[in-house]
Image (cartoon, rainbow, N blue to C red; front, side):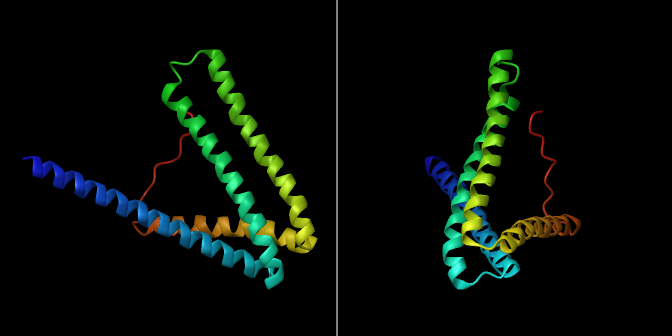
Length: 159
């Protein structure tokens, strides 16, 4: 009986790691697609790309961290809204909004950095390319969902 539990635990761990590996693989492919998409759309030269991508990736990491913190706060409020006092709820809500402000300040800071690396025309093309890539991803998701792909429930942050 003990062996059965060990086998089940081992199988569950293997399945979990396999799913995590597939997710990481998909994320890496998505990042590569985004790099190719943006590079092509803004017509980066090799020299520009060498300077631009480390700065862009730095911004992406900082934004990812802010998004992670915002999601944690939203999840905390969702799971424990009835146990917090009004003051605690207000503090978390203020922190949530403050993180959005930090995100906007990052946009301003890196806009200045991008202008030092690229021409203003390429900076504008960058912003257009980012929006176009998001649109591309949304269309891809819609197609998956209409073709019987995995359906996700609507995102509900503060319920």
